[in-house]
Length: 491
Image (cartoon, rainbow, N blue to C red):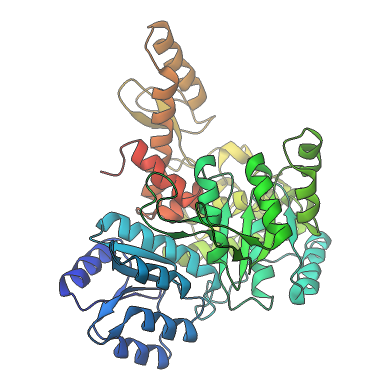
């Protein structure tokens, strides 16, 4: 991974950010003079994210931002400034800054902001090879070849595209491919899951807000439309967007301009829109939960991604790709897979589609006992074989009175502690006990414990990397941060 560049003439700021980022296993390079940083860019070095002070003896952060954007338009730049320096903050946003970080800042929030910038920079980082040249998408099935042909035809088009398909089929990968092969490829690719952002925050996330627009709006903030200027905006799970925001989105798409929340100056839309959903929008239009005029505005060109069971001929090649990719992520030797095991993989229906196959290959990379994966190494809860000793598939969670205890998957018998094998049964027993005892707020208590265990497990798996944990859980980065705060897991 490329380093995070931090430039500030204040040694204490550099030291604090360096220590905080290194604790998060993020490489850091420090600068004190803007001229040295520009020279490094001219020498061909490119950071993952740039964090820059706005006022330095060797030059202005605004001037540096302009120089950086001229050389690397897609590079996320976070500008550090004081609360009172609003004019400079506005200038930074007008110059294309990703976000600004007010001083004095909370270190944890600064790291979270930098992680968010890292997550949004990766899709458009053309200088860093993806998985040592591994393809992001592949498929010989006729349905996938048709998708590839459509992406090729759309490469020179700016038309709005609606990508449909079941969860886990790879809709965001298609959106990213459309971006990378378009004339906007050098611009940013900005994605937002409209179902993962709370309704009262979604408008601000999309369109930004002015300082003082609502309680807590201490500074002007750019929305996703503004961040995607010159590039592509991907609206995932568009079918779950609230009706009132559907109305505003329709107006934006119709007029080609929008206003920040609390703003009075119109901003021009300069982003190609790609939307995606796993829902049947025609049915949602009929039942009144999705606007028909917005549906027609989005449904200019439609790409349907087939479920994995409709492209079984691609499963062996996908499995080999995912095994190689997961081995690279873990820094281990890639495992091979026997033909008999491949045949069983190809016969499975995969309700979770490509994402489920990818997660299964990650599990096999860690849990298969030998370098050649055999049929008996496949997880028993999916394929009906007896699991190898001491290598149960991904554990479920059994609720007890004192803590959540890992329990074997269904069919693996009881655990040594006597916990039921079926976590849903354990949950039912726990709920019944509490309800019969007349405890208050049983729903909230158990729901909070369930969410907390999901978050802890995902964060443990990703070594504390929130953006990656959110991706694995299928929720947004903002959602995981909010949930951790609500559940007291931030301490």
